[in-house]
Image (cartoon, rainbow, N blue to C red):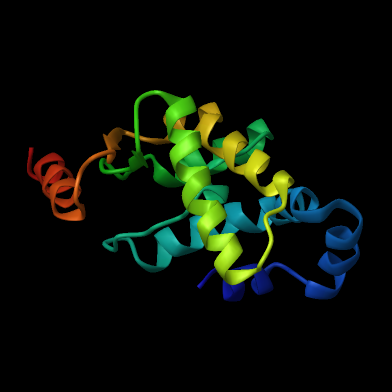
Amino acid sequence: MRWNYYAEIGYDPATLAPIAQAEGMVGVARYWKPFEVYAVERVLADAPQAIVDFGAGHSVYEDATLLSRVQRALAPYPNVILLLPSPDLGESVTLLNARLVTLLEKEVGTVDPAVLAMNEHFVKHPSNHQLAKHVVFTKDKIPEETCAEIVQLLVS
């Protein structure tokens, strides 16, 4: 869905290409920020009763104005849930980066250390906790246990 929303406000892959070439994934992530905010606002407006998985990038903002826009968009929703493996952010980074390495090796054939560093930044960034109204830890849980915990939060 995000690509359609991005296009509504002028996202242009041709503009992104030289940024990606010069700055790699870090530059790509920076370029995407205004589009990510808009996508959060639009998806919530279009599907206010849906379960939405924003992923890491859509919840991390260096710019206070962009973070404020996302906070306003999420304010009416009581069930904004942050999923992390562990309350120990270092452990969460280790576990999530191990998964990411496996995925990148399979899908891309190589692992860019800058992507792992960016993932660490996403995990440790305070905006995740500022936006979340609940945090659920998933380490050592099967998906059904995590689901049951989330459902319990929803009915409480």
